[in-house]
Amino acid sequence: MQMDQLVSLCKRRGFLFQSSEIYGGINGFWDYGPLGVELKRNIKEAWWRDMVTGHDELSVPEGAPEAYEMTGLDTTIITHPQVWKCSGHYDLFHDFMVDCRETKGRYRYDQIVGRWVAYQGKRIVVTSTASGAEAMEQTERRALKFFKLRAKDADRLDWQSGLMPLPTIDDFQVVLAPEAKSLGTLTEPREFNLMFKTYVGPLAGEDNVAFLRPETAQGIFLNFKNVVDSTRVKIPFGIGQIGKSFRNEITPRNFTFRSREFEQMEIEFFCHPGSSSAWYQFWRERRFRWYVDLGLAGERLRLREHDADELSHYSCGTADIEYAFPFLPAGQFGELEGVAHRGDFDLRSHSEGKLVREGDRLVVEKGPDGKPKYRGSGKDLRYFDDARRERFLPHVIEPSAGADRATLAFLCEAYQEDEVPDEKGNPRHRVFLKFHPRLAPIKAAVFPLVNRDQMPELAERIYKELKPHFSVFFDAKGSIGRRYARQDEAGTPFCITVDSQTLEDQTVTIRDRDSLRQWRVKIEQCAAEIRQRLKSASS
Ligand code: ATP
Image (cartoon, rainbow, N blue to C red; front, side, top):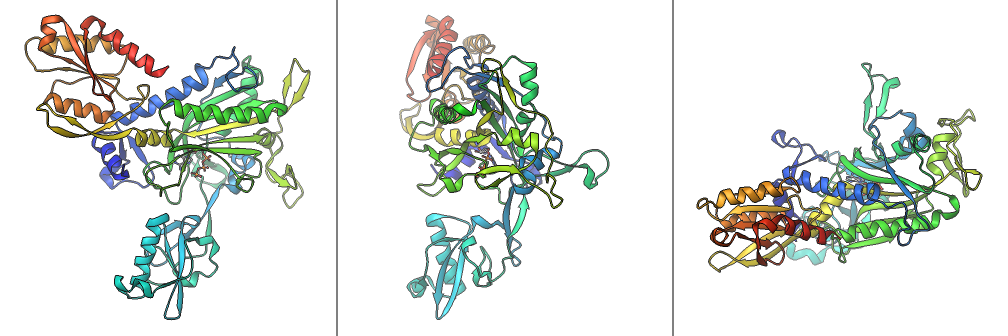
């Protein structure tokens, strides 16, 4: 599947629109249309149900060290600004960017690649923001143009390196920036904090600065004590939260993959330090299986453990669940979810103050006056274990997923094309979205074959019977072939048609989206049949 086919389907059928499109759009922001909102809600609801409300706390799940509890929260987007100072986001949550003085383009420093090339004694680095074969092709084309050569003279260029990341190149004077015509137009890299800044209250002064959260996790840590004190949860337990997060990404791209406003589905799982490694293993597998169960079953999904040099200074282990999105070069994967073993870093930071690594220990960072650089809350966030008579700071395992990236992956995976016979038996090209029935925006569509002979009335009766139970769509307009085609593109698993035989024997046809098999059932069994099929697809 080509990405642009999916992008155009998403717009045409109302899954996704560019935000503020009538004003020319705003980069990095996306709106979910009528079908998109249902799809994304179904994904979030599946997550919430499977992770939080549907979790059976009396049994030991496969692979878990013991039974555990789950609960949820919905915390604010804006918090006390000290939160981000202690969590490290204020000092450390940044990317480096470079600007091009000629084109005014702005790029993430680590996302530019370049190749050394020489011609008649002049050595330059030609850059690109693409990767793989596309970057090779672009750099060749740009080098030819720069040296005023024709395509047939390509072998006169002396390529002296493969694609290298810009941070490995010291001399910017010889760099041909992406899309620039002259050399040396890139500025030195500058740090850029990804948090959106705002002001609380009527005065826009430094004292009133606050930040839109770049992750939902901190709201959970801030309420750890509230949850323990107000409920009867006992360690090990997890708190789930779904909500918006904001990051002022320098280069939002690849459809919704990297947006500036997006939704996260995060769990902070609190456990005893002695069993945290086993819980980390459990959560990696559990979260991976969730995607598989909902249809990301093939080779495009993988679980990748980070190398030691990729780990953040506080993490004892991180694994990414990744998907081979079609906009990436062959063999490359994009992150869907990170599962991290965070030790006691978060609760300690919010208790004592911002932490830094000193050797193999984390210590409170000191300012020039020898006092903590950013003070924590001073609250004792340790947990008292009644049974063990032990007070300790729990360790945290964090499965952190993106609802938008999950939606995009499910869309990419669902996109299918085949050929089906039309009403006259001629082959017709078909596009359909093979969603797992739990995720499908519409579960069933009901059609009267023609608008006469009591067919609309009967179809309406079926529609009304199904509607209280699932999202059902009634469509009486256009040829039956077109109505099927619309539902295929919406990913509707079942279409129910009332035809002339219905009038004789009170049966309707049900058509299966994927196999195109059609079979007849009695009208009064229709609701039970659809319910049964949706249920068996989900178990
Ligand atoms: P990346 O390396 O791709 O920027 P990250 O490692 O910074 O991602 P995390 O901080 O681990 O991401 O966030 C957890 C999840 O939130 C990610 O796995 C992803 O699904 C989602 N996410 C993060 N940034 C974005 C974004 N800009 N747009 C959409 N989803 C995002």
